Length: 391
Image 1 (tube, one colour):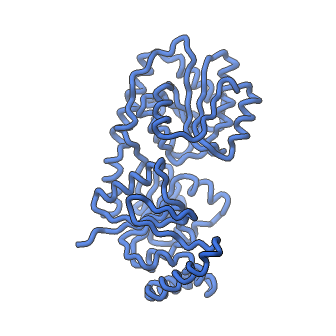
Image 2: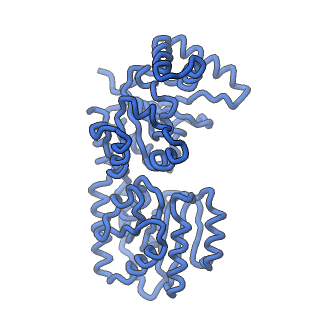
Image 3: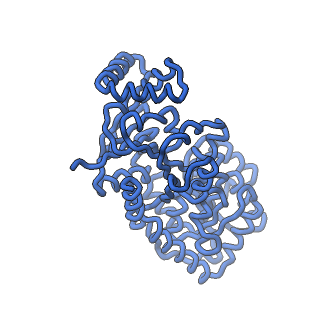
């Protein structure tokens, strides 16, 4: 009997540091699945552990004829799937011209016999709503945050066609599940599988007391407006006005870097804030070991692996109430949840965290670390995905 075959569709081949998708691929393979990675990326660098198939790229003129030849061959060799995709597109109201364009866009899927075709983000499934049915595969779609909350705000009704199809949905949190139900998706079609981390790698280490010292805060994430970093800096300016000795380290790159550096300058935080840019996982771990407090004050966040890593490492965490964060951190049990976009409340909570006695801090850190080990480990996640595809 052949192994079930999962086609995983992503924008790009995941880099070494993108642990979620790499862990998922490894976990599926260990649980008896074959995995094919479909990438829309322009850089045709194959994944080291599974077959990689790339979408047509019409931007490189020297390879245009080769791409067109490959598309024609795929369509002829898989004429049954090609005709089926054409008819499904026509049924959805696409013109002949747009149906042909759609076949060209999705031609790289046609030769593959899959058990499941799983789109790693909702946005990637757009214009591919009929492909799974055309190749006689089941269809799955993951929503991770931006694709469910931000993208539809910019492009209203973008998922109308997708939501009309027979799909099994994967989400990261109960909040995301409720959102899909509001779109009219049945509860039975939606499955929550939270992110997970390598709990053996992110192990807490004893920390030296920080009385009469500089309190070390840290955030890991891309420098993007959804991470709420400008609000976070405003909260730290309140701490400085209250004569709290602290240092805040921000790890990550992004389009908001110049804006955030200028905000730090205007808030008189230049000596208190360090922008480290992108660093390795080992370096992140080393900095977490040297810190005591983790802040994730996002305005939108699907769940956030970095918060899990911080909790596993024994940091006191304060997060916003954006989307899945209030499920990631349990308020006043494993950390604190503060309403988003309210820097004064964040500053107040951070000062309260600092003032907690050591025994209370240790109790919360231990609860957080133990919960992450139990609920958000890779073994548990791999088993949940195994059930997801076998159901």
